[in-house]
Length: 472
Image: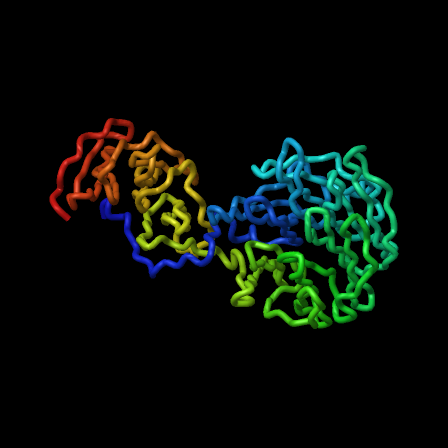
C-alpha cells in the first residue's frame, strides 16, 4: 500500500448542533473530588479540586460555544479544600472579576486562599484571608454594598454560622460576627442583585433557613424548607422573583423547590444521578444548568428552561471522549501515524480537532483543538506518516483571503508551517507522499469542478505550479 492510500475519508451521520463540543476537556479531567460553578462575563466557570487535590478552572464561552482548557490556579497551597466561585464584581483596573476561595488546610497553616480572575482569564493570587483556622467547611462570599463591600460567610467547628465584611475603603476585613444560627453543613450565598444577597443554611433537623440582605439591612431568618434536607443547600435566581433551592433528601436523591414570588413550593425530586455538590448557574433568560458529581466522581449536568422544563442528564467526558459534533459536511479524515491512527474533523463550532489512537485500542485520548488555526474554510485532510511526520492541510481565512494552511505532527505535537499559498478558488484538499524521497503532492478540487495537483521535490522545497488532472 502506498503512503497516499493509507489516508482515508469517513462519512458520518447527519450533524446536530444542540450541544457543545467538549474539545480537549474530556476523560479524567471531568472526574473530580469537589465542584463549584459560577457565572462570568463570557458564560460560566467550573472550579474543581481534581483527583490529585489540585484546584483547576475551565470556562464555557457562550459567544463561541466552546470550553477552555483546564487551568490550574497559581500558587496553590500544599493541601486544598473545596473551591467556591463568587458571582462577578467590578474591580477598578480589572473590570468584571470573579473571586475564587478555598481553605488552605496545610497543617499549622489553616488560612483561606483567595484568587481573583479577570474577564480575560488572568488569575491573580492574593494574600488570602486570616482568622480562618476554625472554619469547618468552605466559606462563601457575596457583594453587599455600593462601595465594594464583600460579605464572607462560614460555619465554624462549633457549628455556628458567622460573617465578616470587607471594608473596601479601609482595605481590610472586619471581625467575625455571629448570625445566631447553628448549621450542619456549609452555607450558600446567592447574589440576587448588585447589593442584594440570599444566605441559606441547613440545620441539624433537616430544615433550611434563609436570611436576606436588601436595602442595607438584614431580614429575620425565614424557613423556606422545614424538613427534608441532609446536605448543604444551593440556590440560584432567574430574577427578583424566581428562585431555585436545591438539596439532597433523606435517601440522598437531589430535590428542588421554587420561590414563585409569593411562596416556596414543596420539594420535588429530580431525575439526576448525582450524590453531592449540586451547583446551579444561570446560562440565559429563563434557563439554568445544574451540575453535580455522581458516585464515581464524574461531573454530570442537567438543564432547565421556563419553556420545556428539565432536560435529560448529561455525563461530561464519560468513558473516553464525548465526540466532537461535525459540521454539515460530515467528513472525518483519518491517517496512520508511527504510533497508531490519527483522526481530524471540522467541528460544528468551526474549529479543527484531532485525536490520536494507539494500535488496537479504543479511543483513549481526547479531541484537541489544532493550534494556531485560522477560521477554517474547508474540512481538514490528514496525510499518512512519512519519516515519522504526519501533515494536516486545510483551507483557511487569512485576513479575508483564502489560503492553504499546513501543520506537521511529530513526537505527539502539531507545529504550524508557513502554509502553501493563496487559494481563492479551492473547495477541498488532499495530500500524500509520492515516493521514498519525500516528494509531496497536493490535490485540490476547484470551483470550476477541476481537480488539480501541485508537487514539491522535497520536504523543504518550493511548490510547483498547479497541473490539471481533469474535471471531477
